[in-house]
Image 1 (cartoon, rainbow, N blue to C red):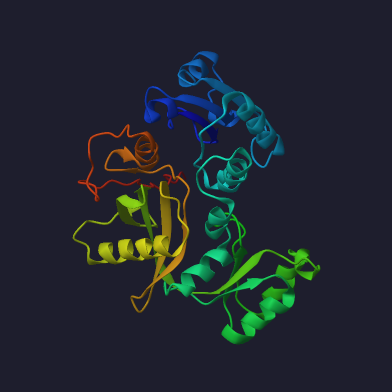
Image 2 (image 1 turned 90 degrees about the horizontal axis):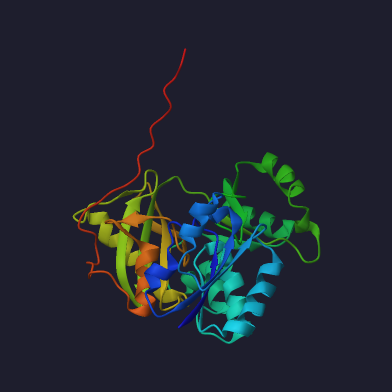
Length: 322
């Protein structure tokens, strides 16, 4: 099989030719920041690829798509892999142009657009906080009138905390709108408003293989420490992530990451779910590696649905000097 890979993760970690196995042509377009600067190290990590293109300005660079189409004319790719959440839409556009299978633009948009995602989840009965699309200042004013302060406003696209703001009172509203002048244009802004919840955060990471959850594990988001199997919250979190995947047009093969809040009353609400790879390790097996191996049947030894051991990162504060 002939694969095209769009990559922005250190190639020393995501060893695509090894994970996909022998007998496949793997062509790589990668961010220059993802390959070592040392020539010998670079040659070592790029060994095994049929062809490699290193791009200095990779993020949101339209030339990457033109390069991919040019390479497709020569290689006639059968699959296109774009694991980073930031490349999901780009990968979907290219699949449509090349006529190769995989997550479609409409399917990706259901994960990348928070309003589209939450609308589908709400229709399916997945517990969420009240939310609304914010295109103009009037939309935000209407939401606040109905739900009060504080209110959380975030970009409809993008991941992590980037661009997320909490408005605590009417005094915060003018400055916020001044930072978003697009909310006063005819086209409007791409923002989402939600009610604010004092909460404890959790996350659920796993792998879908041929439409089935192959591996899943919940953890406390603050320290990313996996929950023990006997923790009563573990099954609830996994069930909520599974319900979200059923409600959305998830690809049959992907890595997923769900964020869940638990309020003071103990109730769980889903904050969001993505279908892009994360740089996590569970039970000594990287989720992305398991995903890639499952695509070609180049799987490691069978793994249980829950890891046999738990592990997590530790953050140690710097020692004060005085």
